[in-house]
Image (tube, rainbow, N blue to C red; front, side):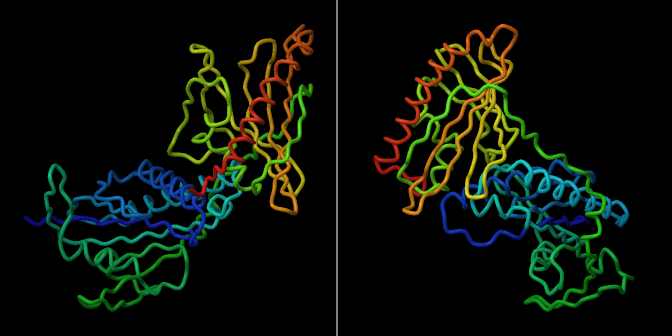
Length: 351
């Protein structure tokens, strides 16, 4: 039995081809976050038929078309998408190709209306029919701008502005397109991440590591590798579906039952340096403790790694500073030694 439906595809584009494993992995997580965001910004109560790579195929059974509601849906998704990217640019800590070019991501929308049937595959049903084929063909088109909404003549039959006719294997499709870039004027202001450092320096150590800076940065900042070189952690809890960035939290279980929550942070460094930091309020006698890994690549492809630890103390906690410096130095040096041994063993994130 056929039913009338609005067919709706938001499609993300803008990533170039990446050759490094890090870029591929991080681009996958970034697109996944954005697709989840689009699904959550579903003001029309559209049904999700399929996640298709960097796009969503959605539909709504409907016997009439309200173009005002559809345009509001497009605006909501567009603003949510670009607000997330704008915030991500402030919060990102990774310098791989995917993370550093995420601000280039674009979004377009294809909207069509027609009758559909459903095909059942095990326990799920999928829209099926010629109109489903038509909307997917429209993903490839000759629209001369990067961000737009396409409306077929089934949606806007009388619209003559920006009208195009596309030739496909099944015939022609007439549609109009609407630019979306003007919506960026409605984006909210995003505050930068605070860049403050606690008052007391507890530790400062520099080590040469035989690996390029970007790859060492990935080893340090990616929680997937953390247990390979940080000692004393029994378990690490973090969101495996997100790229680590400023403000993201993770939990370490130490000494079998002590849970320590840490937040990813950053700070200003020289242009030729990378920095990764973590902050916690769970260290006794301190209000806050920050540790930073500052990386600077040398001419021979190695990395000069400097580790710094700072703290703000609670009242009278500063009396514990000498003992804390001693204990922290011991722990950090053990971790640096383990990290160096890991790299010297031939470990690589590209494997």
